[in-house]
Image (cartoon, rainbow, N blue to C red):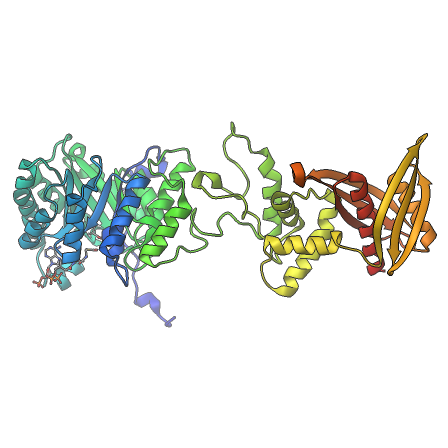
Length: 556
Ligand SMILES: CC(=O)SCCNC(=O)CCNC(=O)[C@H](O)C(C)(C)COP(=O)(O)OP(=O)(O)OC[C@H]1O[C@@H](n2cnc3c(N)ncnc32)[C@H](O)[C@@H]1OP(=O)(O)O
Ligand SMILES: CC(C)C(=O)C(=O)O
């Protein structure tokens, strides 16, 4: 940072609107959406999409439910022109979808644009010129306000004239005008230019004009943007015949917020791109705004029910990556690594009922609504807690660990994650769990085990190996576990008692197994868990005893 930025930058002026209404409103219906992926998004790519890629992207946008799609700038290049023609000539545009084409307010370009869309059913001709003081000064050679207004008016006239042949041939033509750099333009002048354009097109409530008020570069806080939009909405003389459209960029990182507040301010329509691709820091991310509405119970009328497939296609054709933390779509947004989050998710998840509003803690949207799975919700690293470890072992592998055991396995996993310094995959977790609790056959291994009950007394015969030496054991007790523990007494192994156990079944059909979790207490007072898995619950429990004992012997 330089030492005196205070003199280098200036605050953005506020809008004089003391009776502003937008702060007390809520968003309760979806706007009209227009995707500008194939134009504003595409023009910002280092390697613009090929025609084939644009066709694929167009189909994706249609399948999501976009009814207005800016397909390009057909007068800019042959590839843009050809793409437009292919859409039309190959009948790829559904009847309820309008294609939008961008053009400068220059007659030759407007003529070429009209040629590009000949034969389409619904077309929006989008003409623009920049209006801000700096653009007037630098780009248009100190042009006066009147001269700039005249560029817009001429554009409106040429768009009207040259689209008459299209209308005569049956195309439904609408006009969109953008005073580019609107948010840096004096509001009274932006209004004057918009009114002058409307005067040419004479819109009606049945055939409205679209006035798109872009934040071409985002310079202000979102409340200022909302004020600018409310200011315009309240002064446009043909408000009922006008669709007020938003087109925010994200230079300050608040494109989504600016759009949401401007919807409160009265806008009817939103232009943006999937995942916010676009010039510099990008256009508005439509996915986020639409799904924000969805999570407030407002139907966005866009379908992101298969967000992973949408993201995959987007990444393939744009060669950009959706950030792993990107709202709703990022790889990690349904994943909790930290212990307290994992614990809260695990505890709140079972309370979720189909007939109740969604309120699982830390997960503001049901991942299933986006076609995403619950599997990756909890992942394990050194920040993770016992709840997360227990969650993964239960949800991915079916082991329902008793609550007392969570703390122990949590610490074991945490220490390993810490030592490795990486995330542990669920397969790693399973491996750690098995090695620690199940696959323990030294120094004691059990080869066979048989019980017989008579008058409430259980007699057990077992073959074990202690440090590799085979031993035959026999004893009687109150139950199989008691009898087995007594039998072990004859081997000279340290004394221990079984404090408790829990069991449940694992898998189904031919795969069915019993899982037993035993806790023992040794002579020294230490507690150890052991886990046994077998087809019979009896043998599973005996294996669990052996595993707990082996852990105790290892750690003595
Ligand atoms: C904010 C945005 O995203 S706006 C859209 C930006 N996208 C693009 O520009 C991509 C497509 N554009 C192009 O390929 C080219 O700009 C073309 C083909 C449209 C025009 O190309 P060229 O005429 O060679 O160049 P260029 O765009 O620089 O035009 C410059 C002239 O047009 C004028 N001009 C610029 N914008 C406009 C406008 N919207 N309406 C009328 N005149 C304009 C400039 O003042 C300049 O005039 P000058 O030559 O008298 O100084
Ligand atoms: C042409 C206009 C709408 C534009 O892309 C912008 O201002 O960012």
